[in-house]
Image (cartoon, rainbow, N blue to C red):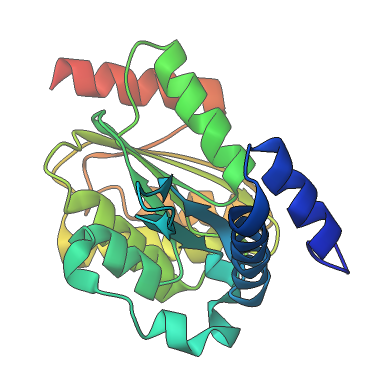
Amino acid sequence: PMLGLLPFQARELAYKLGFRDKLAGEAAKLMMNLAKVFIKSDASLAEINPLVVTKDGQLLAIDAKINFDDNAMFRQKAVAALEDESQERPLDVRAKKANLNYIALDGNIGCLVNGAGLAMSTMDIIKLYGAEPANFLDVGGSVTADGAIEAFRIILADSNVKGILVNIFGGIAKCDVIAEALVKAGQEVGFNVPVVVRLEGTNADKARKILAQAKSQLPTLQAASDLTDAAKKVTSAVKAA
């Protein structure tokens, strides 16, 4: 990896692909240039497809595709400048600007969690109890109150969402911060769908008190004792709606 694709390796590849003479040298040069682009641009994929030999013996890259590592965009300013938000879904753009990991899915239960592993297990248990997740939304370990509020806004902006399961394990992100953000989001945006909340970890007891005090303002809000209870409650509420 430190040396990159070496000339003798590229030539060997070219011969194994059936190139000979001048074309073998051109193919080897093309492969080395492609490898350099891959490394220099922090790509996760650099692909030429199709690569063709014309009837008059020219080697041509007819089409190509490059994917870039999002985590490297801070040092790939020229690549970042090419971004066209009009080609992305509006909610994806909003989530990116709020530093949220958001992927829209086809179900009807929105998921708000902190941590990718927790997001996966939350989606799994929703499916286990007969429903389908509407999104993967990970607010991350260092979420702020504003970030959590924007996360709720994004979930509620999806017309397919008929219920929300909030599954937070408080570590760096404290449960009471999420609870306060949840209440504030409910006051600002309004929860017109069932919202079931499971909170464990740092300041969980304080968070439960915050939610209990807000129950009169947010009648669709329910607390859950654990993840299984949360999944059962949100799927039942959605089915009953």
